[in-house]
Length: 339
Image 1 (cartoon, rainbow, N blue to C red):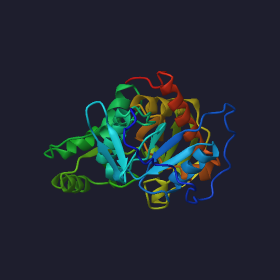
Image 2: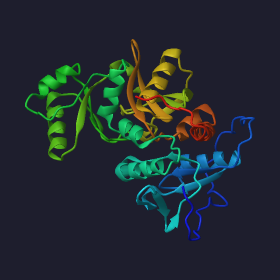
Image 3: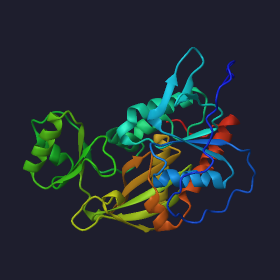
Image 4: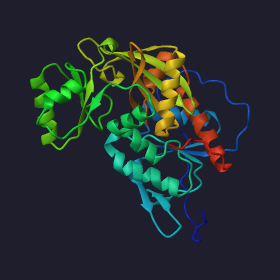
């Protein structure tokens, strides 16, 4: 980016990060010394566990963390010279960005991520990949096209024959999901045709897009969360829903137990992340009779439960990948396969 003629204040990383919750001991550091880099974390709150841990991991590796509230980023466009301001100060000298974009700010968050890309800054999860993963139906379309196993899924706007839609996903009970729900919000189970009709009518009248999905009975309220960084799974756990709940999300009171994934599950998780173009991804799978069934992919996965369950330095693995990714980009290497 060409330097400005006028002297500009520079945004610098804070001298000391906010204290974050106790975390597992960091993994061994890479032996190769790296020049000091500025790593931007797009996050609404420094106090979040994942943000705090990433700040720690960046500092432990001798680099500068810079936490930016996504909604306070101002994008400026001019011919061949996109710029970013933060609280009135121009952002310069960023080496890599790790987006932590919540579902509630998807539209503005994607614009900010795109702007960093336009400025030539490497972004670990690019805007197109985040969008691809956030829309549940779109994500499943990509996974299905690639030959990965997914629960049978239906999306329609025609409510005239709900019975037929139910048949298409294998009958009752079935799962009804908001297209852009997260952390189990907007996920319901229906046991009768009347329940399905009522839920479908309500959401359609509110202008919400939903999908109907097969209920995989053999999963028994459990699923597998694999966290993919680069081209490997850095940690995995089996999540069990609490009594009386069918959603296994940790935010819903689910409990996580560390597991070693079989090669089939590792391959499915890594392939799913690659298909969506994500360098960092939480991949949720159901344990079907015939093997892994891909459920959804999260582009900003929380990992407090995973670090607690596995004792692994998940934050460190993410930061190491971001630094390697930035170096590869600077060297002109191709670091992500096209769709």
